[in-house]
Amino acid sequence: MTTTGPVPALADRAAACADRLRAADRVLLASHIDADGLTSAAIATAALSRAGIPVETVFKKQLDATEIESIAAREYDTVLFTDFGSGQLDVISEHVAAGDFEAVIADHHQPASPDDCHPDAVVDTDGYADFEYHLNPLLEGINGASELSGAGAAYVLARALSTDETDNRDLAALAVVGAVGDMQAVGGELVGANAGLVEEGIDADVLEEGTDLSLYGKQTRPLPKLLEYATEVPIPGISNDQAGATRFLEDLGLDLKADGVRSSDERPGSGGARSASAGEWRTWADLSDDERQTVASGLVRRAVERGVPADKIETLVGTTYTLTAEPRGTELRDASEFSTLLNATARYERADVGLAVCLGERDAPLERARTLLSNHRRNLSEGLTLVQERGVTQAGSVQWFDAGDAVRETIVGIVAGMALGTDGVDSDKPIIAFASTDDDETKVSSRATGPLVGRGVDLSVVMGEAAQSVGGDGGGHDIAAGATIPTGEESAFIEAADEIISEQLS
Image (cartoon, rainbow, N blue to C red; front, top):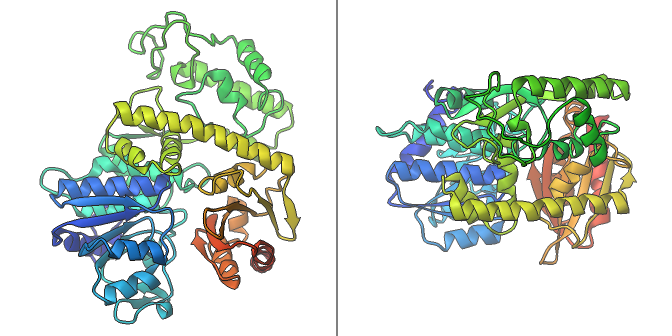
């Protein structure tokens, strides 16, 4: 086996895929629409372009038989699938066997069963459908839910596509954004094969790994808002309490607004803090190292005083990933904020905007992305409020809610994940959410927690088997998965999902 590349176990597969792509006159690249899918597409697009291979990129909300048929109709000899494709090998293999196109797949989802695929197009690898140009960590014993994302697989491919001009290590930053956006941080840190990608990003000087307050919005949110919205670890008197968050910071002696703050190279001990204009609200990125330590220590003290469990308090500080080439104080500087920005584009039918930002375009694409992000945040807030107002229904080992058409099908899974652990939503049970689609179908999204997965919950199996039992289709990862089912089958689906989850937990 070849032992080069960021993930040695995948080196041979990556080399075979790269060789096939180099042999193509042109490539159609099809990818998913979430942050992982967008970064996957950007990484692959950049690598193909640098290698002098013409590429056209398209995005699909879901990859079903109809969408694969539309791809086949494009009359490309070579199609590269990123962040999906493995689970759809049953349909893809039929087109490959028919000579419609040659497929190359860089994915991390569970591959289809070989029994469901065309025998002339696939082979059996440990019960998974496999073929010559198939780059998937699961085929080499690497966990695709926590150790390598779709963007990670695309990055491994990009490294195999390296040219004399570039080794593509600079694309590692996007791979980390994709992994973080795909909720692959275990205990707040990227592990397994993902850790190798982080190393390459650091070596390429496009990434920094550090330890910091593990709250969302450190680059862009005003300090009081940062703490007010910090519901990852609810702290009484601060979380969801604007006045309380402001008082807490003022009592620490912090200046909440800039007053002619000097630039970071002039201010001792600033730790690279950016310069804020006078009168602006300061953000976490504006604080000196000493100020950050003061806030972090104060938060821990307050949490202890208010009886927050010790295991929750420990999560207040975690591993952070900073994109060093991006300006301080912007959404692009922090991997978590970057991934949220991307989710706000493709999930609102503007994947082209997200792709442009990933590929380095700023100005108009970035401003459009920020507008979409503002709308995205509002929709998420309204979606969470809807769940809190309607409540969730408990059904044995699972809990669920039906958003109907009040929440977009493309974000209902994010809302479900946000709801886990809030008042009235049990964090010890997986949550399932339904949303209406434009067709006569219902979108199903499910989310679990790390501890639930540790106890045996695998939502990929749940979504797949429960959906099939009612005439639908589903899959994903152990901690987050989705399905599409016929409208009207929601109750039967919940019954099936409850039975499967009960068995997994027994």
